[in-house]
Structures are given as structure tokens and as C-alpha cells.
Length: 409
Length: 224
Ligand SMILES: Nc1ncnc2c1ncn2[C@@H]1O[C@H](COP(=O)(O)OP(=O)(O)OP(=O)(O)O)[C@@H](O)[C@H]1O
Ligand SMILES: [Mg+2]
Image (cartoon, rainbow over all chains, first blue to last red):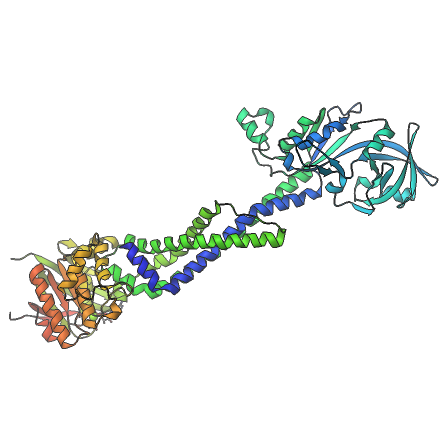
């Protein structure tokens, strides 16, 4: 009978039913779209943030006595458990050299590094690693070094030595002389402006440290730290440790990398890591808030249109009450209607939201995404929540109708 | 001596300053057909609504079918209405989007479970066996009123209330409806309280009471 009532009520009042359906559908669509792209947005944002600098620093364990890391170990970084989260790494070897150019002299830091080096790991696609990919904020006048005797110099150093693109200079370390051609001048706003950057091999020869490096900067996609992530791994149970290891906290990724670089100690660069975590947490909060706002707005719309249809239906409700329908029976008719409308609205909303998410991710991120299937129950669920929230006031009003007033004889 | 179905003493209903029903003492024995007359605004509907559990008295005692209505909760009154009372209004209040049959079944639904065969039978009894699938808008006034009667009696009420059920009908339809009610009462033996403006309609009852400004001024037995 309930089904008969609902069916006829729907067929006879298509306009007001459609209005409610529309409000619910919109809410579900927006919720689906937001939640659908939320993951995408976080991921893209995290990638974007990765360009603001490395978040893990690898140093030799024995800092005193000039400890070094081995260049040979570097490709192993692309083989660790979290290898797909590691977006880049750059090795450095530092030394001090006497620089001489056009009659000027200065003792200065010389850094050997990778600018853009192809790293090949068996079974993996080859990747380009080095400063070029990891420090997009470096403002380079000129070009990146290609030949072994090419170098870029920091802007401050270049000013003092009167170096420009094309200048030549000589670096001397304990009698070994290496001549460099300046192919670029770099402005970074940091200590790099005082240094000379040259290909790693060349600097290793100059310093007599073949195959050695003094630090590695690693850039990794990580999840924001939470209370669990901040626990000390050495105090964890086996299960806890496993969970910690399998969560991409900056600390667990650091641990990961440390394991493959012999004699190394990995430290998160907290100023980057925690700022990033905070930003991503906020971003997620904003997405969630927007979703809730959209749902709230659609609940309001549902409430308004139900109120309107309630006014139109008050004789019917009064009649049902006069016939002896109690509050439960009246409510079940209306909640039944709402349930059906919200299931339908949720499904339609999912389909629309899906398209919307695809459109947004295409226009904003230029990528395609497939909304996960769990969004279907989510969409229907949120449609139902919206519908319930929206029907509280109208239902209260329906229950307050006094049959005597409406059915005046 | 028959048991009183309706027993009021000092029954009063006022709307703020306006006293729609001055204290009324009334006793209606089981099975009686009571007609209520009075000019417009005299409190007839007010009395009927109180007796039918649609409204609550401001003061006084009101016992219907052994139940003190003033002690019942909202849902308790609803239960009382669906189990004990059948109501017919002047305007044929039917759910517009349901067919005649479904309107009758709605009453069964609220009461217990819908039984299509029984509902069809009730409509056949009021002479509408051929209009089961029609919606109220497709029925004449008299036909609609007969659907209302079928709906009112479907759950075998002990008390049938009518608030000018023939008020909108022509002479012929009125006779038809009254005849029908008389027949049904002979079978079902329910008590009837019927508000009317029409002396002729009132004469179908066993007794008529007259209200003036909320006061019961006169009552008279009809010659059988
Ligand atoms: N909700 C209300 N608020 C205020 N006054 C009301 C209300 N309902 C009824 N009244 C007043 O109570 C009095 C009795 O009304 P009632 O409806 O019982 O009259 P009636 O005898 O049924 O009249 P009619 O023959 O016109 O239907 C009238 O004066 C009416 O104005
Ligand atoms: Mg009246």
C-alpha cells in the first residue's frame, strides 16, 4: 500500500517531486565531484610542493674525519620500497678550492653535483636525476653544464670574480688545477650564490675523492605527519613498525633511503616537510568544508521545496490524520518518498558528479581520472543525509497540522 | 438500558475569548442515531470534532466508547480515531491522486492491513463497484460522498460521524446517501452523530439536538 501511495503521489505531482530531486541531485553531484577530485588535487598539490625543495637529507654517519657516501649506491635509491614516492635526488660533493679568473683570486666552495643525469636501474625505466629537476626555483642566466669542464657559478661569487657566461677560471686544490668555462650564473637567494657548481666527476678528480659524495638531497612524496607517525620507531611493536614503514611518512621514507646508502644517516628537512604537511592537511580540510557547504546548501534547497509542497499537501495530510494515521505512519510516507528520491538523486548525482570531476581534472590538471566506485554509496548516502536534513522542518510542520483547521466543515 | 457510547459533562471548547461550546452535558446510548442542528457558528462542528477525537476540550469530561479522550496522547487519539470512529465530511475529502479503491484501502492501511477484496466489497455496497479505478476528480459529488462512506465504514467503526455529509448534494443524492447510511447502520449497528442544516435529513435520526451559540437549547425525539 505504501508503495502504491508513493507511486501515485510521484506520478501525480511530477513538478514538486522533480524540484526536490533536482536539489538532491545537485548536492550529490557536487559532493561526488569534490570528493572525486580531492585525491587528485592533494596528489597534484603534493607534487607541486615537491618543487620547493628536497625534504630528506642524507649525510655520512661519521661526520668527523671527512666521512663520505658512495656514488655507486645512488641508483639503489630508485629500488627501495617507496621508490615511486621519490620524485628526485641529487648528490653533492663539497670541497674548497682556490679560484682564479682574470687576475682575481678567491678561496671558495666548489660543489660537484649532477645537473641532469640519466640513472638506469635494471627493471625500471631510466630517469633523469639532478639539480635541474629538483630546484626549479634556481634562476639560471645561461645554460646548465654539459661538458665535464663546464660550470655554473653563484651570482655573488660571479660578481666578485667578474665572471659572466663564457668566462674562464681555474680551480686549484693541493696543486691539482682544473680549468672551467662558465656557462651560467645562478641566482637562488641562498648560500648557493657563493659557490661554484660543476659536474660531480670533475670535482671528484679535482679533490682526489673519486667515487665519493658528501651528501644527497632527496625529494619524496609523503603524507602529513600525525601522532602515530611521530612515535619513535625504535619503541614500536612489530605490527606498529610495519604499519609505520608502510605509511609514506617523511620519516619512514627517509629510513627507507638510509637503508640502501651505506654509511648514511637520513634526516627529514623539517622546515619543508612540516610546512608541506600542514598545507596538505589544510587543503584537505578546505575540500571537505566545501563539500559540506555544498551539501548544506542543497539540504536548504530540499527543505524549501518540500515546505512548498507540504503547504500544497496539507489537506491530504490533515485527511490522513483525521482517518487516524499517527505520527509514525505520516512520517513513514514522507520518509519513504524522501528515501526513493534520494536514492535516485544520489545515483544521478553520482553520474553527473563523475563527469564534473573528469571535466575539472581535465581543465585544471589536464589529466583524466576515474572516480572510484566507493563514491556511489557515498553519493547515495550523502543524498540521503541531505534529504533527511532537508525534511526535518517540513516533516515537523506536517506533524503539526491540525486536521480540524484544515478540514473545516 | 443501553450503554452510553458518548458521555459528556460540562464539555467546553473555547478559542481564547470565543466560547464555541458552552458546558454541555450529553449522553448518547449505543446504537443511537443523533442529529445535531443549529445555525451557522453555533458549535456543531466543534462538538463533532471533540467527539471524534480530532480536537481536545478546554474543560469538562468526555468519554467515548468507555475511553476518557482527555487523557489520551496525540498518537493515542489517532489510534482512537482509526479504531473506533468513521468520519464523513461535507467536502468529500479524498486523496486526489489515489483511485476510489485506493482511498478506501488507505483507511485500511492506517488501521491494519489493506485488503483489496474487502475494499472492493465496501465500494460495491455503496453502489460504486464499477468506478473502482477512477480518481476523485472523475467522480460526481454524490459518488465521491459514497466513496467517503465506504471509507468511513471499512474498518467497522463503532461510531460514525457526519459533518453535513449531504450539505453539497442535491435532493436525490441526499436521499440515496441517507438510505445507504440507514441500511449500513441496520447491518453494522454503529452509533451515528450527524450534523445537518436540513430538517428532513435530521428526521432520519432517532433524536435531534439543537445548538445555539454553543448552548444545547432543545432536543426532540423523532417519531419513528
Ligand atoms: N480555530 C478557531 N479559532 C477561533 N474560533 C473558532 C475556531 N473554530 C471555530 N471557531 C468559532 O467557534 C464557533 C463554532 O464554530 P463551529 O465550526 O463549531 O460552527 P458550526 O456550527 O459548525 O457552523 P457551520 O454550520 O457554519 O459549520 C464559531 O463562532 C467559530 O467562529
Ligand atoms: Mg460546521
